[in-house]
Image (tube, rainbow, N blue to C red; front, top):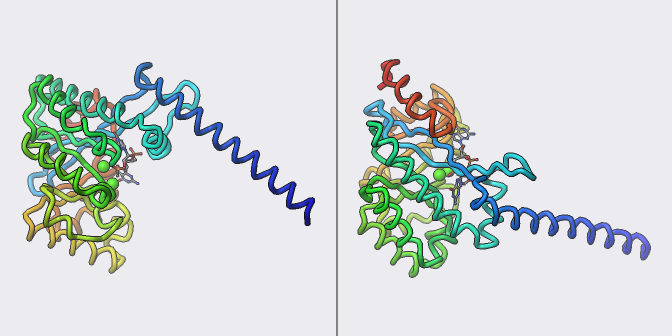
Length: 282
Ligand code: C2E
Ligand code: CA
Ligand code: CA
């Protein structure tokens, strides 16, 4: 038993080292990624279900790493949060999204806003609202051209500090959205206190629609709550015609998902919008 125990310990030790080695490698590569131009933004169109119009797009971060290849944000963002690099990267995302929207508007593209995901670490940094204001100013955009998506986690942690940041952002006219709504802490209390404009129904509820009673009931409840609080409801992860029909029936405002479009390169968005309008969907 003793020998096996030692062996087990060694094996554990080795995997732990590999793991830490990998983590350090990712974190050090990530520090260079921004300066080396390895980060870019994909955009997923957001559709207004009532107007059948593309109202905006969500910016989704991508990392093309020479060492690791295409790395998914779900794999590298936790590392960026862990090392604190997310503060710098997140500021770049806001700036780049604003630059892109400015370019599209100058081309005559009618997009109400661009949505950007924000990590709790960014909000706690204390410089966040200033970096947002600077990005809007540099690209001559009104606050309502920018929508910030954050998960419920942000709202639970460190509420007093983040409230000041929210207030500052609201004063600029920036739109605030709760992402993955219903997935996490299921406390609706913060909806009463925070200056939120919209909620995004988590894609996890989309999978069972329209057949799973629990999923349909949750979606309907979210739409009703949002309605009575005057919030916009967005559904994410919409993949099928049936899901779309259900969401329209219960009064969902906007939707995003593979059914309409996958996240695409910035250069393809104007083409997508042209085709959308031509096909009469708009
Ligand atoms: P999220 O904000 O919930 O973004 C939605 C994710 O679902 C995206 O994955 C998107 O590509 C994917 N998706 C969109 N439509 C569909 C669909 O119809 N079906 C399915 N199965 N998936 C769909 P992605 O791009 O891999 O991003 C994953 C997560 O990484 C995001 O989840 C967000 O939490 C985070 N993330 C992405 N970009 C940023 C960023 O700039 N900053 C921060 N802090 N987080 C980001
Ligand atoms: Ca999001
Ligand atoms: Ca989400």
